[in-house]
Length: 140
View: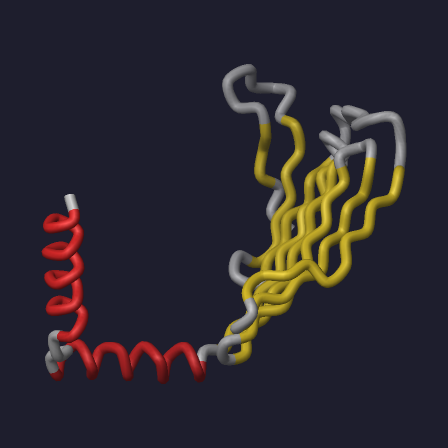
């Protein structure tokens, strides 16, 4: 058993001490530069007055730091979470919960509005005229 552990340790040392080829070094440097300079931001919002729920999310990245928040309601509670992810990992900065009711209320005459920085804005309603198609797009 000792011989096996010794041989495995020696092999691991040889593999780990092998030089990284230039292509791999270039790839790692490019990845480091891209991560260091990465930037984006997006947002989304769903206000579903058919099924009585709401979802929102915002996020932005500046280099190696991502900050954002998300929120949802389900008829019982509204929860909002603010977070950060950086060199120290993902952390929740603030987590809020608020009681809002006794559960979701279905509204067959309601409308669901969807908006996102990447997808634009649109709305849907229940399609009561078609048994196979439950929702109809009513683009704003």
